Length: 155
Image 1: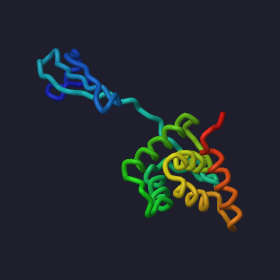
Image 2 (image 1 turned 60 degrees about the horizontal axis):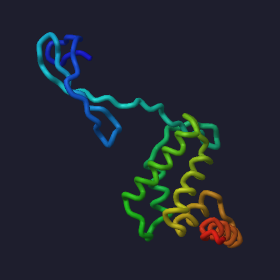
Image 3 (image 1 turned 180 degrees about the vertical axis):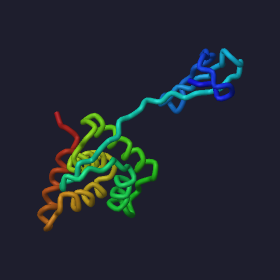
């Protein structure tokens, strides 16, 4: 790290603390040449997450697209902005576990998985578009799957 004052490369760390809820480390440094103190931040460099579309085209992951799709599905539903942000974050985290490239199908399934827990009506709306429902029987089948997966388990 170069000193912003004199450009020297020798320094010592005076203090280190976690910052941004553990997402980075804040370090106070002192230049050994001029004595000036300055602050640096260390963050983990994340690899970009790439979405492979059905056409084969590749695009960078965009959380805003997830939020927009869920907002449309959850229109007039009691879903807060914070819940939308949390859902997008959880979807991104689950996709990163798969690898640096994921299919658009995996993105849709990850969104459905999160929506199932958040709001079942929004889940059905999103599923109807994502899965391309053609008739009422598609809704009935999905409702049966939804109620079966959310029923409390009996002993």
